[in-house]
Amino acid sequence: MEWRAIRAPILHAFSISFILSMGDLTVIALFGSQDFNTLPLYLYQLMGSYQLESAAVVSLVLFVLSIGIFSLTDTLNRTSKKGSSTKIHSQEALAMLYLNNVAYRYHSDWFHFELEVNQGDIVSLIGPSGAGKSTLLALVSGFCQPESGFIQVEGKDIDRLEPHQRPLSMLFQEHNLFDHLSVFDNIGLGLSPSLKLTETDKKTVRNAAEKVGLGEMLTRLPSELSGGQKQRVALARCFVQPHPIWLLDEPFSALDPILRKEMLSVVKQLASEKQVTVIMVTHHLSDARAIANRFAYLANGCIEAQGEVGELTDAHPNAALAEFVRAAH
Image (cartoon, rainbow, N blue to C red; front, side):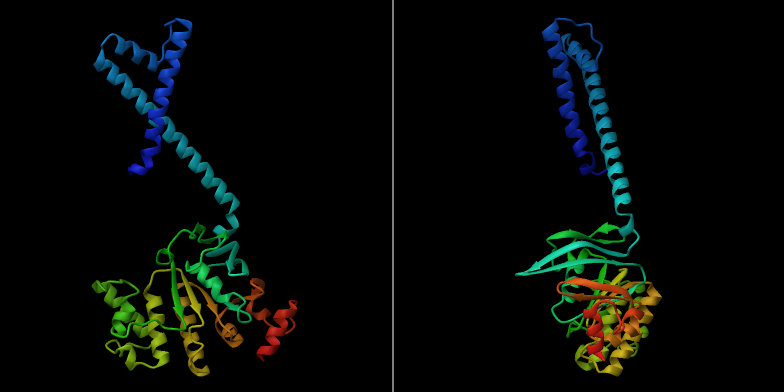
């Protein structure tokens, strides 16, 4: 048993033992009677008659009973809170990712987000520049801290976790490859930052490289790759990680339309294979329609509309979104 698990009960036991003993002694002093049959009083009587061994045993029994009582109370209290929390947050516990009334301030601008994403969803974040799409990803990934609200993954709060502790993989427009490392090692970083890879890990790296079409390029350096190939390396690095959520911040916006479409197809295939949830920022409605099953439209610092990708039409009831769709054609 860990020390932190019993620290509080032990401290409470010391306190209650002292309080009980002093309480009984105070009663004796006030009423002058010794016709009591309590452990604290019995301990006092043993000490008074110098029966120290017996007194030690009684003291230990009192101490252990106090620990047991407070341990049981603490356990019941935690169980009650857990049950209450599960009942209150049953909605978000079903979601892979849940943002509940998350508020964030950047200088004088405020952002407010409410979003629920289920396992296996591919959600496209769309909207005008400055609406908060990348800000939302930064909050989920831990690079920004909300002023209020909470963020959960599979019903567990992640607000207090550092970015590297969160169950997320991120893919940026900048592929973030290390120029001095080979394709193999850049992918391997997703499994071990120290690159101390087991034989199983090495097999996983090779498998991921094959899936993104880089099986014959494992020894190359990033300087020997095209832009699309570099993004494939970054995607393979996401693929080898065991995280259930991928965050994509316009990773293919710098690629030409044909290559971008090809990369989106690879993402969709890999996401389906691993059953991961994908949140992707894009400025291209064609990207959203090609890969996502759901969308969230951001404007004025909040999510103004969300739904199935098939609802992305110029007849959408949200006037701003309808105009956004018309402008994209």
